[in-house]
Length: 363
Image (cartoon, rainbow, N blue to C red; front, top):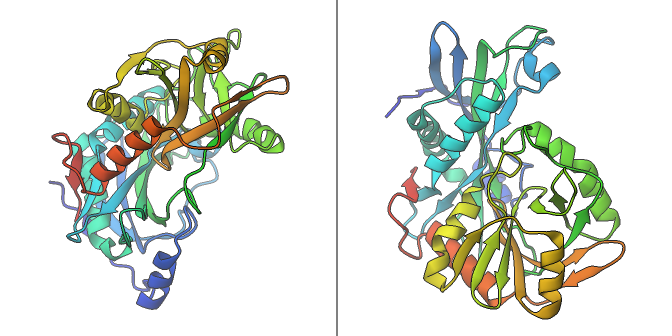
């Protein structure tokens, strides 16, 4: 286990303020007292492992991240179990994906143990910031955001020679307020998230920036999320703005588009596929057309749809909307969707036995 030097925050939030934040956490708006940091240079590799006060970063105006978007990130959660211990979910897969993203964005790879140890070092120090669920329906957690940037002072395009890796953390409430309700999805037919040979499989900020205009379009249509199609002819389903797509068929199949260079390899997506057989489902990763979903919903062969990702775990989809037609799965979440959601959350919160290696103790 890597040792992280500790520089304690001299002005941490008071217990009163912290408890107020934990009593009503809002995703991504409040942060814990510390952050983990590791530096990379071409000469020394990854070094200077430390936990320091959370605060602004000092960047040279010529830092490559500001000009060429050499940046990647990950997202995962820390869950407090009933005995007070704190665990995270399949961080090895996040570490692997970060290295895949790093290779695509010309950033240095990081040892998987360093990745997990950085999470542990931060959570051990800020364990008091991990919310405690009130009951089994309370989905509070501590959201962890590891990210890597090229801090090199250089206006040129090449693999970076200096990078910084950080982990910050934000208390988060349940994604759904007032109960779980199916969301409406806008089908983006003009704006594309990624194309062949691009960065769609990498978790890099530019992909999400590119999806923002489509999200604005979706909101204007009364939808909460956007569904992207392929960039070649727009006939095949790919993924949502920040989640993967799953379709449930009447004969017990769980369909999802295959991971490719245009689709993110979601950790929740992979876990849902791994858990499918235990719920009597046959997972099937294959190309799916927009028309297959439309006609399947109409003739009863596709009976449920849901999205999956770290933030909301599993989100039931009620409608797929276009200007000309709508796929309608109803206003009640499907039984299979909710069973999968319960199974996943019970594992993450320690209420059910996890497959070997899935849950890693942080504090």
